[in-house]
Image (cartoon, rainbow, N blue to C red; front, side, top):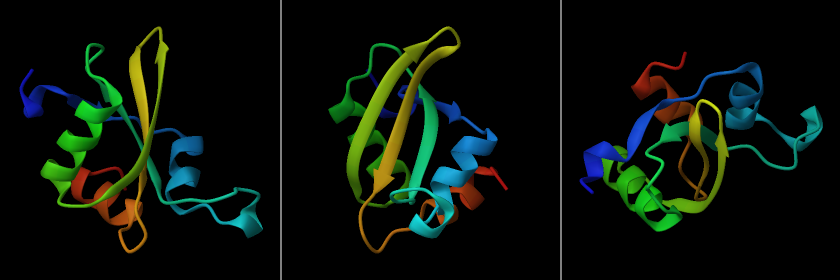
Length: 93
């Protein structure tokens, strides 16, 4: 599978936007996460590698779940990188 085929599109909802910049004061344990719809055949390592290569950031952890509209990946960026910056680059805001 090619790196370009793994990340399909960003998933934008109010909850997903809160994950980007959410802080403990807002009731979130931690922010700096972004959610994407990904290729159903991609595993966490594939998603991490594709995201790091495409956006030139470091990924700390990836969570996945499968829903009716496809496979969702929540990607937590490492310290020093901003999910809001990545969101700006992909047109979430």
